[in-house]
Length: 594
Image 1 (cartoon, one colour):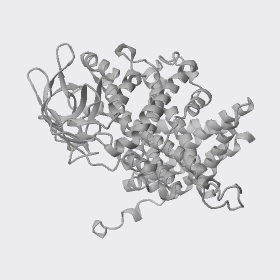
Image 2 (cartoon, helix red, strand yellow):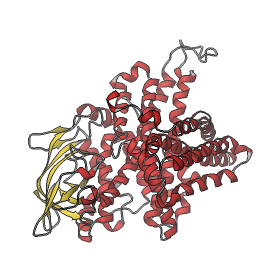
Image 3 (cartoon, rainbow, N blue to C red):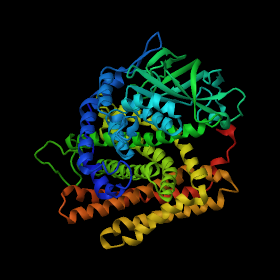
């Protein structure tokens, strides 16, 4: 049976020492987020995740969700009570506005708690995770009446939310969707169509489910510019705001999936269901992007979360499992064999996971702070810079964290050897669960195309120039001997990123396939540079703490950072070579040759 311990100390190090959360005290909600408050909040979240949510992960995967003849769905044993504890603890609304019943604390805290939840039980964490995305969309685009009707109950956790985009014939290309909306005399709409792959589409955890559905109004323009977003509640609301008559929406089936069995991924049928316009007609994709961007960051969190829990279990197993002797001679001569953690190849896998997890968490928190600036700062320039950062880093975080998160789950399974292939140890579930994160909310190839085709040239490359400026400025001001093992490799990697950026600028306009063929490598190269910058920031903070008399944990931090710089960051050279090879060999074969 796998175990999990929430990385509270790691998070506190990032918040207090690396990014100095007190610097944001001028923003609403941050002054209340003092260290005296944050630490007990994280401790309580850790307790819920470790003691309540994580023990349900393996049995929940085995039991799965059950659809009944009436279309209702039952979640695995224990999920309903765990969700009740989650809701009663106020976890849904940590960062939601106080006017709707939230606590108004920084969104960064929600991201941190969501990582713990997803590590403990990815399938369970998706129920509140989708709801938080729906809350964000209604906050941004809903009318005052819609906010008053839906947000308090959703923030309280009594109601949950979903987003309904995909249809059987269209996934990424939402301009092809066919779900139709017919306007009624009272201003509502009748929604008819079928949506697939709807996470948490039907379940028994909440009183009502608020579906956000993308549909096409009769006579709307073709393509994505003719789509509109609607609120379609499972139960229509009575005059007093409580759930009333059942709406014309039902679960047709539960998808048979590779992983996340305990989340009810549904086929949802809309049969003249009553829906209410949110945002403007024919501008639904603008409103839906609020949810999609929230969800993409949330999926990046999932990649990191599974990598973290897989690493923790692999490290424990490697310390305990006896197999062979160390290459340089027995390390534990009193035992019949040495634990496998003495072997360099096992260390290679563990260090790769650890170095990625620590930097990935830093990159998420750094980016989350920028999101808080966007939503809370009164300074126009600060909000613009934060928005640039979020737009640039969102595809990188989604794709890089999920690609490497899956790879790390596989490496953790490898550490177990044959036992990793056996269900009782939990490693094969981590591999199965992690795989979907590379696909949903925009497959990772789409994220790479978004980065290269849209985010990189946006506003004349302003966001990318800001990243280069910050990283290069850091390198120039931190060239002392103690930091050379970190800033030196980062400088080389940034040089590769600059060369790749220039090559794409010179070769992608005339031949777009060059951009398509190099997009995934460009995202990987950028992601490594971003992680390298995070390691520099963490190494600087760790050195300062050691100078002040900190414990051995900071020495381990510096060693892990050196491993990243020596063994992982040099992969930027390979990414650059692939980008500069262009698209010729990729695109040369005719389709019939495959």
